[in-house]
Length: 208
Length: 324
Ligand code: HEM
Image 1: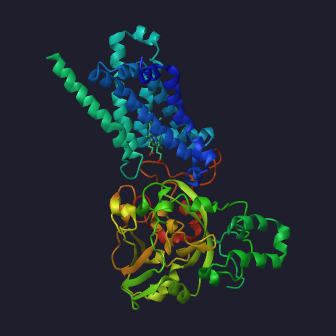
Image 2 (image 1 turned 180 degrees about the vertical axis):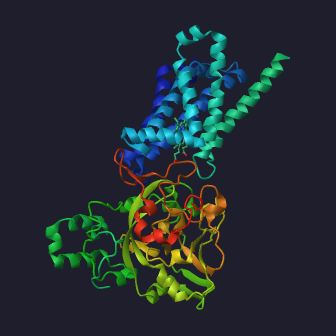
Image 3 (image 1 turned 90 degrees about the horizontal axis):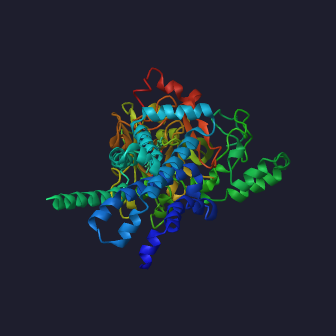
C-alpha cells in the first residue's frame, strides 16, 4: 500500500488532523501571546471554532463527489472511510463554537445565558446558526450503526441529506456574521459547489 | 491648567496609565510623596506634542469615579485591536499596515464650509493655536459590542469650532478622513467607500464631551489609532469616532456617514450607545471588556455609554429607536 493511502486509512492520523485545529488557539493565546488575540480571547475562539466547523462540514460533503469523480483513486476511497468521524468532528467544533458564544455573551450567569438563546431566536443570522447546529446534532445522534439499522437505509439516507442544507445554512450564517463579505466563505464552499456540480454531471452521464 | 474642580466625566488619575506608574500611584504612600510624583510626570510626559498638557499632573482622584470602578485597558490592547478598514478588516491588520510607510507627519487639516475663518493648519500648529492639550479618560464602546477605557490626549472639539467661527446657518459638522490608496491597502481594495466620512449635529459637536484626540497613554496617537488627529465622542459607537481627519466642514444639511452609506439598516447617523436598541444581528445590552480574559470579560452596557447625565438633554424629544 502506498504511503499516502496508508496514512489516509489510519484512524490515528485522521483523529490527529481533526484535533489539531482545536489545539491551535493555544499558540497565539499562550505561546506567542498575540495582543490582538488576547484582547478578546473568547471572540477569537468563537470565530476559530465556527470556521473549523464550516471547513469540516464542507470536507465531509466533498468526500462523496471525490469518490464518484475518481472511483479508482485509492486516497479518495481511504478518506471516505472516515466520513462519519469528520462529520461528528464538525458537530464537535460547532458545539465548541456555541459554548464560546454563550460564555462570550452571557458568561456563566444562568439568567443571562437564557437571554442569549432568546436573542438568538430573534436574530435571523443567529437563528440560522441554531438551525444548522440542530441539524448537525441530529445527524451526530443518528450516526451510529445502530441508528442506521433502526431507521432503515433509505430513511437514514434521506435524513442525512440534511447535511447539504446544513452547509448552505452555515455559509449564510458565516456571511452574515460579518459586516463585510468574508472571502474565506468562497474558499470553503466554492470548491464544494464545483465538486457537487461535477458529480451531478458525471452521475447523469453514467445513468444514460 | 492648574488644579481645577473635576467634571463628572473625568475619570480618576489612576486611569492615566503608563502602566507601571499606574500601579505605583495606586499605592497611597507613593502618592503622598509629591516630589516623586512630579518626577514621574516628567518621565512619561516628555513627548514634544504633549508639553502643554503636563501641568497639574497627576490630577486628584475624582470621588465620583473611584479607581476601582473603571479599569483602563492595557495600552497593548488599545494599539493592537483596531477597526481601521483603510488598513484591512482584521483587528490585527491596522497595526501592521498603517505602519508601513504611511506618513502622518506633516499633516494638514482644513476648516471649511459655512465658517467665517476658513483655514488650513498643520496639526501641530493647530494644537498650539488651540492652547495645548489635556487628558481625558473615556469609555469606548464599539458597535460590535466590545469596550475599552482609553486615556486620550487632545482638546475639546468646541475649541476648534470657536476657531473656525461658524456662520449662524451652519447646523452640522462634516468630518472627512484621508484618502491615500497608495499607502492604505484597504482603500486599494475599496472595502468601503473612501474617504471615510462622518458627521455630527452642531450641538453634539459643541458638547463638552466631544474631543479631538492627538494622543493616547500620554504619547502621540499611533498610526493604527487614527494618527495624528481623530474625533472622540464617547457616548456614541466607535465608528462615529472618525480617524485621521483631514477636513472639517460646516454645513446646513445632515452629512452622510460611511457606515450608514454601506448598511443603512444597521448603522444610523446618530449611533448613540443604547443598550435597549439592538443591532439587527446582535444584542447591544452587554459588551465584552477588552482584556477581560476568558471568564470575567462581560458587562452590561450603559445608556449613552455611561454619559447619560451629560448628553441626554441633546436628544430630548428624539425617538432613539428610529434614530439609531
Ligand atoms: C448554535 C447556534 C449558533 C449560534 C448562536 C452562533 C452564533 C454566532 C455568532 C454570534 C457569530 C458572530 C460572532 C461575531 O460577532 O463576530 C457567529 C459566527 C460564525 N459562526 Fe456561528 N453560531 C451558531 C452555530 C454555528 C454553526 C453550526 C456553524 C458552522 C457549522 C457556525 C459557524 C460560524 C462561522 C464560520 C462564523 C463566522 C466567524 C468569523 O466571522 O470569522 N455557527 N456565530
